[in-house]
Length: 160
Image (cartoon, rainbow, N blue to C red; front, side, top):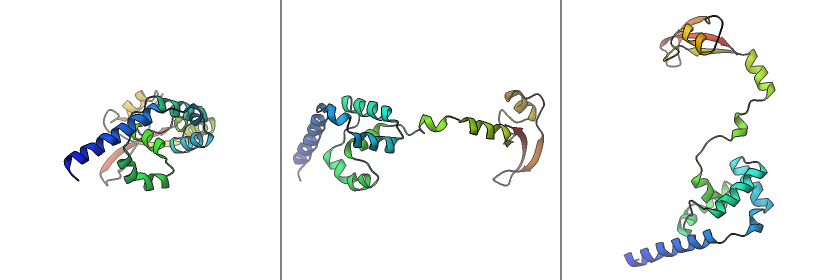
Protein backbone atom coordinates (compact mmCIF):
# COMPACT_ATOMS: atom_id res chain seq x y z
CA UNK A 1 0.00 0.00 0.00
CA UNK A 2 1.43 3.37 -0.98
CA UNK A 3 1.72 6.33 1.33
CA UNK A 4 -1.08 8.11 -0.56
CA UNK A 5 -3.35 5.07 -0.21
CA UNK A 6 -2.64 4.98 3.54
CA UNK A 7 -3.47 8.67 3.87
CA UNK A 8 -6.67 8.14 1.88
CA UNK A 9 -7.67 5.26 4.19
CA UNK A 10 -6.99 7.42 7.26
CA UNK A 11 -9.05 10.21 5.74
CA UNK A 12 -11.92 7.81 5.01
CA UNK A 13 -11.77 6.51 8.59
CA UNK A 14 -11.97 10.07 9.93
CA UNK A 15 -14.87 10.97 7.62
CA UNK A 16 -16.74 7.87 8.74
CA UNK A 17 -16.18 8.82 12.38
CA UNK A 18 -17.55 12.31 11.65
CA UNK A 19 -20.68 10.82 10.08
CA UNK A 20 -21.18 8.64 13.16
CA UNK A 21 -20.88 11.71 15.36
CA UNK A 22 -23.56 13.56 13.43
CA UNK A 23 -26.09 10.70 13.43
CA UNK A 24 -28.13 10.72 16.64
CA UNK A 25 -31.24 8.58 16.93
CA UNK A 26 -33.26 9.49 20.05
CA UNK A 27 -34.99 6.10 20.10
CA UNK A 28 -31.60 4.41 20.48
CA UNK A 29 -30.73 6.72 23.39
CA UNK A 30 -33.48 5.07 25.44
CA UNK A 31 -32.95 1.49 24.19
CA UNK A 32 -33.31 -0.66 27.31
CA UNK A 33 -30.54 -3.08 26.33
CA UNK A 34 -28.09 -0.23 25.71
CA UNK A 35 -28.99 1.41 29.04
CA UNK A 36 -28.60 -1.90 30.89
CA UNK A 37 -25.25 -2.52 29.20
CA UNK A 38 -23.96 0.90 30.31
CA UNK A 39 -25.29 0.31 33.83
CA UNK A 40 -23.33 -2.93 34.01
CA UNK A 41 -20.12 -1.68 32.34
CA UNK A 42 -19.85 1.65 34.13
CA UNK A 43 -21.80 1.06 37.39
CA UNK A 44 -24.36 3.72 36.46
CA UNK A 45 -27.92 4.04 37.74
CA UNK A 46 -30.57 4.01 34.99
CA UNK A 47 -30.72 7.80 35.02
CA UNK A 48 -26.93 8.13 34.91
CA UNK A 49 -26.70 5.67 32.02
CA UNK A 50 -29.32 7.53 29.98
CA UNK A 51 -27.69 10.90 30.64
CA UNK A 52 -24.21 9.64 29.78
CA UNK A 53 -25.39 7.92 26.60
CA UNK A 54 -27.16 11.08 25.44
CA UNK A 55 -24.17 13.27 26.32
CA UNK A 56 -21.77 10.93 24.54
CA UNK A 57 -23.93 10.90 21.43
CA UNK A 58 -24.15 14.68 21.37
CA UNK A 59 -20.46 15.33 22.05
CA UNK A 60 -18.42 12.23 21.26
CA UNK A 61 -14.89 12.84 22.47
CA UNK A 62 -13.12 9.71 21.28
CA UNK A 63 -14.48 8.32 18.05
CA UNK A 64 -12.42 5.41 16.91
CA UNK A 65 -11.74 4.41 13.33
CA UNK A 66 -13.01 1.19 11.80
CA UNK A 67 -9.43 -0.06 11.68
CA UNK A 68 -9.05 0.53 15.43
CA UNK A 69 -12.38 -1.15 16.21
CA UNK A 70 -11.44 -4.14 14.02
CA UNK A 71 -8.27 -4.59 16.08
CA UNK A 72 -9.98 -4.55 19.50
CA UNK A 73 -13.50 -5.71 18.63
CA UNK A 74 -13.24 -9.37 19.59
CA UNK A 75 -11.63 -8.66 22.96
CA UNK A 76 -13.97 -5.79 23.85
CA UNK A 77 -17.14 -7.60 22.80
CA UNK A 78 -16.06 -10.50 25.03
CA UNK A 79 -15.91 -7.96 27.88
CA UNK A 80 -19.46 -6.80 27.08
CA UNK A 81 -18.65 -3.65 25.10
CA UNK A 82 -20.12 -2.56 21.81
CA UNK A 83 -18.35 0.09 19.74
CA UNK A 84 -20.19 3.02 21.31
CA UNK A 85 -19.57 1.87 24.89
CA UNK A 86 -15.91 1.23 24.06
CA UNK A 87 -15.56 4.75 22.62
CA UNK A 88 -17.11 6.16 25.78
CA UNK A 89 -14.80 4.08 27.97
CA UNK A 90 -11.80 5.62 26.19
CA UNK A 91 -12.88 9.05 27.49
CA UNK A 92 -13.53 8.06 31.11
CA UNK A 93 -11.13 8.69 33.93
CA UNK A 94 -11.09 5.48 35.90
CA UNK A 95 -12.48 6.15 39.33
CA UNK A 96 -14.74 4.17 41.63
CA UNK A 97 -18.43 4.91 41.37
CA UNK A 98 -19.73 7.37 43.97
CA UNK A 99 -22.28 4.86 45.27
CA UNK A 100 -19.44 2.55 46.40
CA UNK A 101 -17.94 5.29 48.59
CA UNK A 102 -21.11 6.00 50.57
CA UNK A 103 -21.01 4.44 54.01
CA UNK A 104 -24.16 2.69 55.21
CA UNK A 105 -25.36 2.84 58.82
CA UNK A 106 -24.26 -0.77 59.34
CA UNK A 107 -20.78 0.05 58.06
CA UNK A 108 -20.61 3.11 60.33
CA UNK A 109 -21.54 0.94 63.33
CA UNK A 110 -18.81 -1.59 62.46
CA UNK A 111 -16.27 1.20 61.99
CA UNK A 112 -17.10 2.68 65.41
CA UNK A 113 -16.56 -0.75 66.99
CA UNK A 114 -13.23 -1.30 65.18
CA UNK A 115 -9.70 -0.64 66.31
CA UNK A 116 -7.13 0.54 63.77
CA UNK A 117 -3.37 0.22 63.85
CA UNK A 118 -1.79 3.40 62.45
CA UNK A 119 1.89 3.58 61.55
CA UNK A 120 3.49 6.68 63.05
CA UNK A 121 5.23 8.48 60.20
CA UNK A 122 5.17 11.73 58.25
CA UNK A 123 2.84 14.39 59.67
CA UNK A 124 1.42 11.78 62.06
CA UNK A 125 4.78 10.70 63.49
CA UNK A 126 3.75 10.95 67.15
CA UNK A 127 0.81 9.74 69.20
CA UNK A 128 0.13 13.37 70.14
CA UNK A 129 -0.14 14.37 66.46
CA UNK A 130 -2.61 11.52 65.87
CA UNK A 131 -4.65 12.58 68.92
CA UNK A 132 -4.80 16.16 67.64
CA UNK A 133 -5.68 15.14 64.07
CA UNK A 134 -8.39 12.71 65.20
CA UNK A 135 -9.70 15.08 67.87
CA UNK A 136 -9.10 12.47 70.59
CA UNK A 137 -9.24 13.36 74.27
CA UNK A 138 -6.06 11.44 75.10
CA UNK A 139 -3.05 10.20 73.15
CA UNK A 140 -3.45 6.66 71.79
CA UNK A 141 -1.33 3.74 72.97
CA UNK A 142 2.00 3.38 71.13
CA UNK A 143 3.11 -0.10 70.01
CA UNK A 144 6.63 -0.89 68.77
CA UNK A 145 6.75 -3.58 66.07
CA UNK A 146 8.04 -4.24 62.56
CA UNK A 147 6.24 -2.94 59.47
CA UNK A 148 5.38 -4.90 56.31
CA UNK A 149 8.99 -4.49 55.09
CA UNK A 150 10.40 -5.90 58.35
CA UNK A 151 11.67 -2.51 59.52
CA UNK A 152 11.29 -1.49 63.19
CA UNK A 153 8.41 0.99 63.43
CA UNK A 154 6.03 2.60 65.87
CA UNK A 155 2.28 2.27 65.62
CA UNK A 156 -0.67 3.46 67.64
CA UNK A 157 -4.10 2.03 68.28
CA UNK A 158 -7.02 4.23 67.30
CA UNK A 159 -10.61 3.27 68.02
CA UNK A 160 -13.23 3.94 65.36
